[in-house]
Length: 223
Image (cartoon, rainbow, N blue to C red):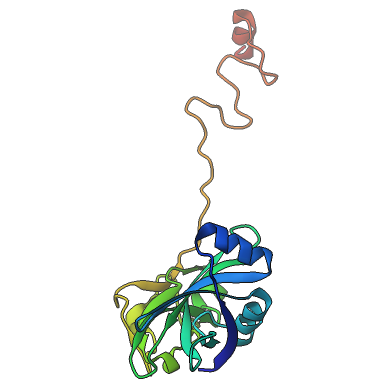
C-alpha cells in the first residue's frame, strides 16, 4: 500500500471552539493517537482531500509530519466525520501504527459481474454485506475486496466465508451474507370485492341497461 506524506500543525486550542477556528482557516481538525501519543492537530483540508483521492481508499497510510517530532508518524485515518449534507470532511482521527504489528480495519466489498439469475431469470441482486473487518499488517491492507457474482442463480448467496483472503485474516463471522439473488417480485391481480358483479353481468331482474324490470315485463319475457 502506498504511503502518502501530509503536513500537520499542532492545535493549541482544543474542543469545539478550536475545531471551528481551524475550519474557518481552511484546516481540517483532528487527533492523532496510538503508541503512547495523543496530539491535537490540523491538516490542510484541500491537501487531505487530494491525498484521499490519490489513495482512492480511506484505509490509506499517511506519513504525517508534525512539528516537534523527529520523524514522520505513519498513521491510518481511523475515522473521518463528514457533514451529512455537503459530505465535506469535518474531523479526522489518525491512529499512529507500528508497521510490524497487525491492525484491524473495515474493508469495503465490491461486487463485480452480472448475476446469471438477474440477467436471464429476472432475479434481484441484493448487496447485503458491504464491509468486513480484517486483520493484517498496515502495509497489507487491501483497498477493497472484489467478489464475482456472475454465477449466482435465483436463490443463491455468497457468504463471508466465500471471500478471498490472501494476505489478511477476515474477522467477520463467516456465515454472514454478502450478496443474494432474490426471486423476481410477482404482482398479484386484485381480487374482485365480495358481492361485486362480473363485467357484463346484470343482476337478476334487471335489464341490460341496469334498470330493474317490472313484474309484468319479467313475465312477458317468458311468453
